Figure (cartoon, rainbow over the protein chains, first blue to last red):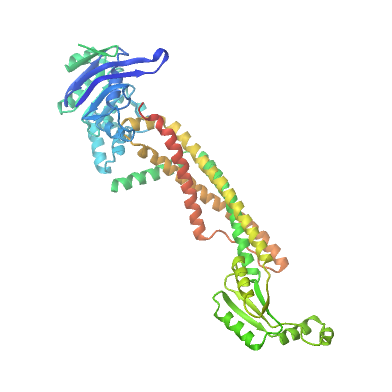
Length: 220
Length: 302
């Protein structure tokens, strides 16, 4: 379970900085599918980053599975992040490594046995339809394929929570539909799926619980 | 455990691969470290050789115990039994005063002058070889013997030993200072190399941290790289010194022939070589650790 209570996040800058989130409180139950929507700069990405301890709140508490991730020691942060599968807006793929190696990375980090890891990588690549492109470099993939590669990397270690930041941002309509179905399939097997998006069509298709953000505040 | 070993093996192999990927840069880095290490190493090797030669080619310093002129046979026996029992004495030789006079006559050609003396002016004496030839041990023996009964004078020619000792100590100090300075250079070289690697791998490190890599996990390949770099530098330094010695030995052999002597410089002993390699690897590791620790914190959450 994820719960925010009175969370404020301020980014420093000219004129006292700017509040990306203002006193945000919310709860997300295990297995839920949630879309966080709002305009650019409404605080969607910040919300995801606070969950995965990529940012720390200036005020309030962020609890993930009962753990206050805002006050964790730096050495404990990696273990919190392993609960999550993260899909970044800019993919953050490693372009000098093959598709296979990109998906292997989380398993290397966690320390899976070699044969088990190989099986999981293949399963993840199979799930997103990239099994035939194991040896390819990400640069040679299409935008949709890169996004699917990012998904494979996010889910290969079977996280309980999947965070996706603008997953359909650079996809054409057909790919976006395909991606929505993929996300739905994870939700159906019990993964908590949290999507930050301003893609109304995606929200309409998935019919998730919806959290609207406007200028750092939740609007009903 | 098996996974853990596998990860370390991968890091080690990865470090070798990374060295091989940029051969020229790697060679230059290793060369810099090798040269930096070769300098104090060569000094040390020469020092060890000089020490060895001094030990082999100079007679061990001896103590001469001169008894008083009025010493009787019983007194001589007493001294002899004390020498026999003494733990610090390796061997001793008695020279009776008559014997000493006869030797002097024979060797000096002053038979007439000596013959004109009414009585034998020379005392009985003992020549003592000590077990331990350090200056302090010899001087301790000298002071002890001096206090024995019927001993007039104890002669210890320790001046040369002191000089040699002082020179060797100076040499050791130079090796130490050079070694410390160039060890620092080695750490600095690895520090910078690793910093550049971290900069070029920013994306990879950032992604790894975002998906749950711990700092030790990210640091590990760099540490291996630093250690391998240091080790390769150590081996290079060893090889440079070896080459230098080969050159020198060729010249020395010619020179030694002219003097009818046998001069040859020996390279590091096996234990010293091992220590050198371990030391170089440890320094490389240290440089990498400092660099990685300093440069990885920027990825922590704010």
